[in-house]
Image (cartoon, rainbow, N blue to C red; front, side, top):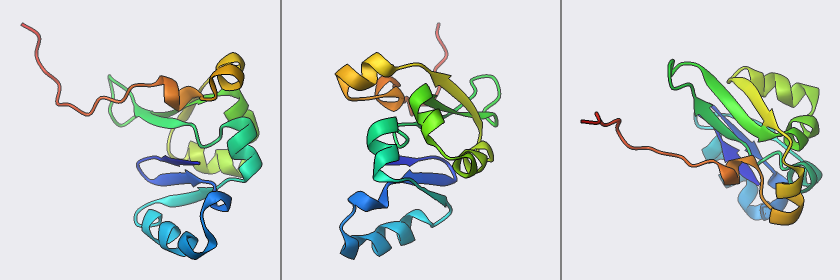
Amino acid sequence: MLSIGDHYAVICTEVIEVDDRKFVLENLRKGREIIEITLQQAENNFCANIIQVKSQNNHKEKFHIMSQAAFEGFTEDQKKVLALHGGFVTFPLKVIEIIGGGSARCMAAEVHLPRRQIK
């Protein structure tokens, strides 16, 4: 229902209690562009199940890893906004999404440790 990148957030506000939406959006907007998706985009296309990664060779180059279903589920306007924050890497993950109930972000491991030199 939510994916947060460096300078954007993909969010399905329909699943947030009405009384809490303003608070959530105000906090997400601090330094981020909001990309609102529908419940259908979240549930049927896994549009919030994406992850932004940085290139290993050039940490300035960024990509969005997502399933093909997620990519096809975003509107053209939503894709334009995402494209401002990185390229797209898509995979056909239909079996994982149908049977496993997850998608690309669920399959990626995030490592936030400093790089070590191997001796």
